[in-house]
Image (tube, rainbow, N blue to C red; front, top):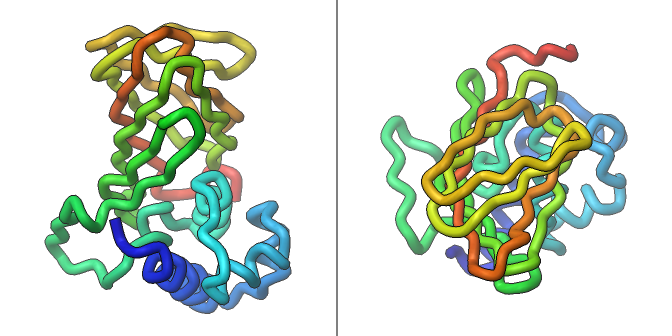
Length: 192
């Protein structure tokens, strides 16, 4: 994983560049992303490493993936992401979310490797309308909650769902959970 200072600088440059490319003010981005203007200033100045949820909201507002916002170098036609360059978001209980690779519009895709310790959970924000998530469980048992219902996905099983509502990933078991997730957003925003 890149050094935290290098990552913060890359995020700062990418958010600032994407916002400028769209001619968007800080206030406009704050309103569209539901991230405070003060937090956006800290991010654009490289003074903080934002959470995956914050980056997701900013990416959604800019129409780019989290992968694009954490990209340390320019994206060539063929891009190999080396293990040392994979961005990992650590969370309590020993869990992590590793963004393996992502692409920008028109085909917005992200590939994630998630790990949750026993009893650990993660609340995901709603993505733009039309966003889908596809998950396969490699080890353990995933309890996914959305639309007011919980669903259990066992080892070797897969699930696909609309991710345009808040959702929760939880490990309600007593062994570590590992799953791989693909997030895909529509080429055209359905709510614009």
